[in-house]
Image (cartoon, rainbow, N blue to C red):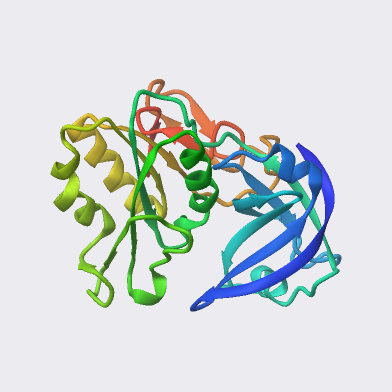
Amino acid sequence: MFLANAKVDSVTQIGTNVFLLKLQSDKIAANAKPGQFVNIKVSNSNFPLLRRPFSICNVEGDYFTIMFTSVGEGTLVLQKKQKGEFVDVMGSAGNGFSLDGNYEKAIIVAGGIGAAPFPFLIKELEKIGKEIICFSGGRTKNDCITYEMKNVSTATDDGSFGFRGTVVELLSSQIDRYKNERIKIFGCGPNAMLKSLQQFCFTRNIEAEISTESSMACGFGICQGCPVQSATDKNKFLLVCKDGPVFNVKDIELP
């Protein structure tokens, strides 16, 4: 993990209240893996005080990108960053997705801003010859993000974009297409979606990894502020920032 003053290259709006922040840091970019995150101090002042965690959305050379929705004081500061400014970044942190395994098709399942880690993952999966199928969902069309996805099907709760229902319901309606293929699921989104996806994978005995979301103070395990219940040891809690954010679906119990 590195502490870097990353240089702002651009802030780009890609959807309703959805932005990409492109930053330059050779050390962070060179060491990043899909599913990892960076912890960002959004301003030079003491407000907002705590760092904000963001999935690494993509990496190109010395540059890495984060995706975010502008929903509070911290993300509003990021939205207003100008080219040439510097941002205090810690990363890359956490455990990312495992690309290994005896599967030929990777199924991506994203809920809302949970789409953030997948452009980087998709690029790396394609390098090793995996076929990519994507499912993206949200409450409405404005919440459904398909940026840099491949072979994507969409779902919205209100039916305004694609399938009417949840993204897991959409996946369930199409999963029989792949019953004779070796598949692995990669998921990221709100806990309710991940819990539904987890049960879906258990029922069908499908290999899967999920990237979990949590508020983090330190970002590297000291504060113990992002616990998740271990599924294998009822007396043990894992930390999203250190043991995750990516977990095998069999290893954790979601609230």
